Length: 187
Image (tube, rainbow, N blue to C red; front, side, top):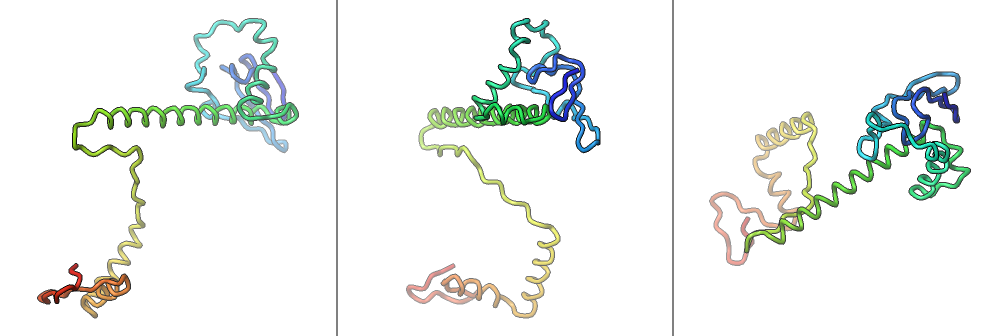
């Protein structure tokens, strides 16, 4: 059992990157809680510890220095900042770093695939955009109330509300059956 900060690690090797089968039990203000493993296990960056052999003695001996070096290089932490972190905080930081690396590499792979596809597209075909805007989903209740108001206005005032919108935007509204006069804008 290893003790650091407010967290106790039982089982496993007690290392940050090789926490393996060890559970993390944290105490905060006298309360005990366990952090679910799926929140801290590394899925992509060396997180599969089931098939690993026993770690080399020199690696175990210097593991704390290796972990500090990782935090210093990737996050710019000083030694004091590193040692002020609890074990749970370190695990969450490493998991967030893994998620960022995976997301960044996925975006880069998508950009490269898109660029290659655009280079080899057929002549005259439009280039595909890397990013596509996703429309925001409106509130269904709000849409229903807006539609009811528009229908009510349509029944009482006719198309006057449409004419007001056109006028506010500096455009002329063409009513049905009206013929355009010379240079007037048609809509």
